[in-house]
Length: 370
View: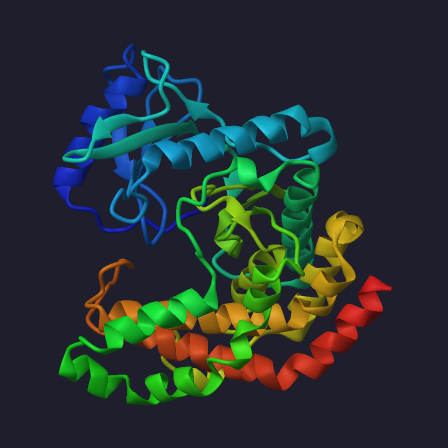
């Protein structure tokens, strides 16, 4: 994989080495190095000449995911289902390694919980897509993932993060934090707070339809950003990764969040807000790939809400960044003070740019879906 390497303190690396032994009891001589660029978990790469392939070791952030057993049970159910359908699915599937006692986890609340999986070799990630071919491939990967679970009862999965993308619930949390936020942070956020309140009603359309059972509950990845899709050397998408947030939900949350990253014109924390928006060509190519795999499982109402989903999910992520900033940066990892504030500004700017392009996006959806 082609990941950027985060700065992780030596204590975490030592803890990773100690935990790796539970999964690799016969391999005392191995190297441990930081790996990946995720906001939530700590990830390391384990290499050794004695291993058939490198191992990815992760410490699950149990402050974010308090029920780690349920999280891993969800992943086990999902990967087993994909294995059963691997010939039809056509993509590689994450393979987790058990401890000597046959468990998928080791650790405790004090030291943290660790898991291990085989590295998907000869694969790469992209933080943003750079051409329409990549967008088409990413769209196919997500569409295939969704299609494989059309015959799977989503309620078999545990909602480890209840109401994860529910804007109404996120707004309620935002207002709770607003009442006790630091005065300095409040002053810096006044424009964003005003924007949140102005658009709060308009961005709850998907929530209300889901809550009233007008949209089906499906198996949803919940974090299908482009760097959670691996590509092989030929440029084809080959594997969906980061399954921690796989839960029952609305399929539109996945598509909207995918476009938020896949078709973005700027980084998630872009400082020049005038650059924020989405590339319509990438949106169209992603949608074309997605519909190639998932068109037959989608309802007409789901299809009609595809453009709105991109706006709503971008707003929702901006809201989450803003809420976390006002809460003192309790959820997301940050690289500098006010990082979450800048992320929120960039996401809101992107949501505003998407709003302008909604009529064009609706025309594209109509053309590709009929």
